[in-house]
Image 1 (cartoon, rainbow, N blue to C red):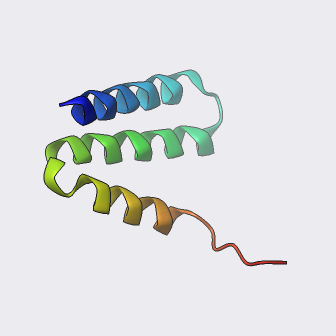
Image 2 (image 1 turned 30 degrees about the vertical axis):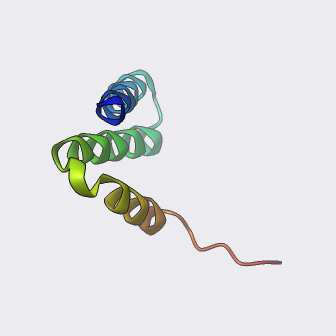
Amino acid sequence: MAIAKRLQRQADTCAQLAAATYDDESRERYLRLEQLYRRMLVNDGESEVRFASALSSDLPEQRPV
C-alpha cells in the first residue's frame, strides 16, 4: 500500500511539473514519467522490473573516461 501511495504522489508531481514548465523537452520527459508511474500502479506486481528497464532504456550509455 505504501508503494502505491508513493507511485501516485510521483505521478501527480510529474503532472504538476509538466504543466508548470515552459521547456518542451522537459515537459515531454515529465509526461513520460507520469505515464510510467501510472502504469506501474496498474501493474503493481511487476512494478520494480518495469521501472528499472524503462529507466535504463531512456538513459544514455555511460562509459568510463
